[in-house]
Amino acid sequence: MDCKMPQWVCGPDKYVCTLPRDTQIVAYKELRETEHTRDEALQQMRDWIMKNPRIVNCRLDGRFLLRFLRTKKFSTVQAQEALERYLLLRQAFAPAFRNLDYTDHTMNELISNGYLFPVPKRDHLGRRLVIGIGSAFDPYKYTNADILRIHGITYETLMEDEMNQVHGYVHFADGAGVGLHYLTLFTPKEAVRIVKNGERTVPMRHKEGHGINAPPTLKFAIDFGFSLIPEKYRKRIKVHTCIEDALKYLDPKIMPKEYGGVMPMAEMIALWKQELQAARGILLSHDKMEVCLDMYSAKAREGAVSALKEGFTCKKGSEMMGISGSFRKLEVD
Image (cartoon, rainbow, N blue to C red; front, side):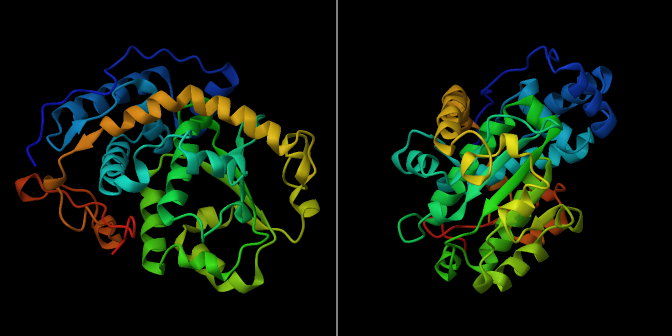
């Protein structure tokens, strides 16, 4: 492929912090963010992107670049690596990460059915709570590409909010109705690649995870999933025997009515669709972001864990090691 001259999705802006004072204090204490470190890091990121021959098109606005800087606690080198992996992942796995349009019939159906959505209010620490209901995803009707696209729509929309970038996320999952047939969605190799690439690539601060109704028949799969994530995240996940136990950790006031809260799920989803509509344009513009695929190794384009372990350092001829994979419908491997 002939690599084009950069035509930036969003050009560089003069970033002005509009975060509430208490959120700025959290950013300073937890992320080492100050006006000076922020301005300096943003300039370094932009200079690096504009000089990087592998990046054809990208967003240069502060809100986008701060996703990566905040997740990496303003380690510019780590943020640059995460950003390039992110761009490569989106393009290499295009069927799953492009056209993130919530108005698409399948995506809208999954959202309306409550498969994945955040509740409207934040918890006492300013975090967004993301609800996942496994039974709303029919593995006989939907594909593995669908499951990645709906997660992409949800997370990309949430990451546009700087409050979320700083305070992070809490997750709640209900596994009722999930059975062995769900294991047909991804092979073990695909699951490993998705988790490992997501961990290194998606700039989200996952603070806690809570689950109920874990299917006993899937205990081996759950244990396998736990083995894939770093210990620091494993310690943040709790599987509860019932919703009452989960509500000891989750604020009932912000939970859906169906799970001991006040507001019905349908009303929460309607409010979420308003957020999705507001972010729809910028999500679709992400399809313009591009890297020179022929400047990456085959392993880098497949999402191989071995490529992740080797790191993202320049090789001869500007080749870089990185992500790899090819999905079923997607087809990974």
